[in-house]
Structure formats: C-alpha cells, structure tokens
Length: 530
Image (cartoon, rainbow, N blue to C red; front, side):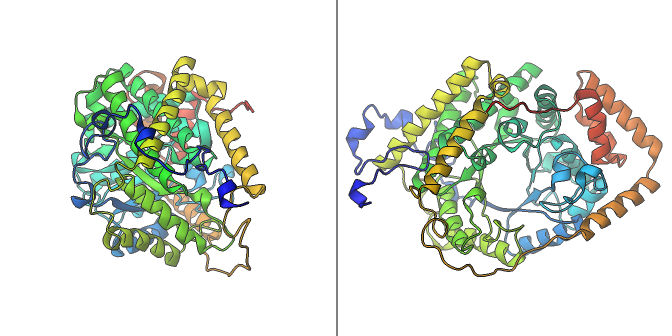
C-alpha cells in the first residue's frame, strides 16, 4: 500500500492527521490545560526543573532463584550505577504459598525470587542498608505480609521506619482486571490494602503503600486509553475506601504512586502520561477537595513494554526498549525500568540486564533529554493527542462511576471485556499484516542464539531445606499465638498490620500467614464474562 493511501493511527486506533496546527486546539486554554512544569494541573511535569534538578530513579526489576542469588544480582546492579532496587517475586510467593507446597511445584524461583519467611527477606537485603536505598516490591495479594517482613528487616538494621523509603505495589484491583494473581475476594482484599494505606500514613511517611498499576492492564492487551482510565478509576476506588476508613485526603494521598507501561507508540505514550497528571490533579482538587499540592501531583514509575518484546531477532528488543524509555522520560517519569533483550525467552541474564541499565544511563547523560523539563510542550500534535486521551479516559471513568465503582464494574466483567476486545483487535491487525512487527511479520531472518539465564530445580530444594530448618528451630508456640491473634484481627475491624508484624517477627511463614487469612476471608474464583 502506498504511504498516501494508508490510514495512520496510534496503536490504540486514534486517527492521525497529516498536519496539526492551531485549528486543532480550538478552545484550548494554555493556563487551564497546560500550565508550566511544576504548576497545577501538572500536565508538563510535577517539578519545575524536572531532571535538571534530579534524574529519574533507575530501578531495574530483578529477582530469581534464591534470596542469596538475588542479593548478589542486587549488589552487582548497584555497583553498575543502578539507583534503586525493584524486587521480582516468584509465582508461589505472589500467590501466598511456601516452597514445598504442592501448588509451588516447578515454579519456585522461576519468575522471581522465592520468599517464604522473614529469614529470606533478611538474606535478600544482607549488606544493603535500607535507610540508604529505595526499594520497590512487586507483590499484590500478600503485599501486606511482604511489607511487614521488609519493615522487620529495617528494624533489625536499626533503620527508623520514618526514614524507610520505597514502594509496595499492593494494587489488588488490577489483579482482578488483568493479571489474575489474587487470593481473597475483592472486598476483604480491599480491606487489607486500606490497612496498609492507614498504617503507612501513621508510621512510614516516606514509603508509598501502593503503586496503582496500569502496566499489567496494558500487558493484558488494553489500549493506552484503557490503561489510563482503569488505572485512575482504581485509584479513585482506593481513595474512597481510605476516606471511609476515616483518613483525611491530604493525610494519605501524597503517598499514592502510579505505575504505567511504556509501549511502542512514542507520542501516544507521552500524551498518556501528560493526560494522567492532568486528570489526577483535577480529581484530587475537584472531586476530593485536596488542599496539599503534593496530593495533586501524580508520581509514576514506568516500565518498558514486556508484551512488545519478541523472541524473533531478540536484539531488536534493545531498540524497542530505548524508544520506550525515551517516551517515559519525555513523559516525565519519576522512576524507570528498562526491559532486557532476552526477556521473551527467560529472566534477564547479567549481560542483558547491564545493556538495559546502560540504555537508561545513555539517555540520562548523553542524549540531552534532561536539559528541558518538557521539551515537547506546545506541540500541536502532542497537545491534541493529550486532550483526546484525557477526554476518552474521563469517559471511561464516568461509565464506571455510573456502574457503582470499580468493584461493581469488575464483578460485571466490564474492564475485563473491554481489554479482551482491544487485545483481539490488535492481534488481528498483526496477523493480517496491517500492523508491522519487525522480525515477526516483516523483515524475517534466521535468528541468532543468545545466552540465557537458566533456573534449575536446585533452587527449590535449597528453599525447602531452609524452610524445614527454620520450622525446627523457631518457637512454634509463639508462631501459633501470633497467627491466632492475626485471625482475630481479621475477623474484626482493627488494622491487621500490627498483627502481621508480630507474625513475621515470630518467623511464621508466608504460606502459614496466608492460610490463616484464607480461613477468615475465603478465596476467590473468577467467573468468566466473555
């Protein structure tokens, strides 16, 4: 097809016109819609100087096999110039099972690090001072348990909780929408999330108790608009629950953080980030009456798109990742992870993860992008795309409001169905050759072998042995008393975090703690709406 005959659209299907000018911004108010960097509504960034004052945190997502092996990887990455840690947990940990449980068979240490007890968390951060590095943990259904372990390690290191900084993902709503790693039903799960938000507001003023995550929504096949809309509506749901608990909006909203995907469509991604800041600023000020400027500033971490990586011609993934990272930076991310070239095959090897980190460093120190806070601000095309993204996302948010909120929408299967339809459309375009993926449906060639990181079953055996030894030497009576107290708290209305801390300090295991909560809350089985 000749270029002139093609219909140009974004990945999400938004038509792109040949030329943009002032006429495309009719009704555009630069003060209301744009402002300056660091000023409401923060479309152009949450800080006046952006990266001139401080670069984004370079935070490579990492975890595999045992805590000892992951600890060595963390030390290596910090030596290579990484500025923050991000913990990837294995599937049994994500689902609240210990190594050795029948449900863990074949999965221990395979997609992240295995953490079964406080002892494992101690090993994971051995020699890494938690008062001097920010740590992000990608854990959701058992998030409160893993956070309790983390805080207990900080205690052991002599770090005051008021000085501990980092983020725990803890976004259970997107699990029901997209990733499906849930344990308990939605409402008990929301109670646990609210417990962590309340506890953080009172005890850990520098720690983000939740990272409201569009990343996995996009990985499940959503459009950019759906990613944005469902993420922000999830955030509104968390705010509503915290307010119902009795918290004041400015008491906890400044510690809410966000996590977005950085996909291939360069300008659409930048528009998404800018629209996210603007929508959130108006939600905080207009919907909730927040007075603190910190409440209205949407802070976000970005990760390049894992779903865009291909096993065909894997070195093409280096180029994809660089472009996606550039979009995140020009969109104003506070923190960034860059995917490795080998991730369509396996967890990142040391060589591949080093290239991914160097990609961020080249952007930061060689590209010049840190020089201007919002270098694309005022582009007719970008401003029009930002306005369209904002309007479309707000339309979704209003629809979910009319359904009674995000939990009601999830129970009806609304976001799940929307994402499935978008994913199907995209795949049809790829298979029909209407959307070109280099090396997959165009420009194919023979693939070159690459070195891969392999995790064998010895990691599982070491974890099982460690767990058995722990159970023999710990005070089993203390463990039982702590678990009984946790169950009583879960049956009532008190915050569960103090009881969770008592349980992990007694070296109750993750599986034991989650089983105690399963007895109270039950488990959840999704009903298909498609």
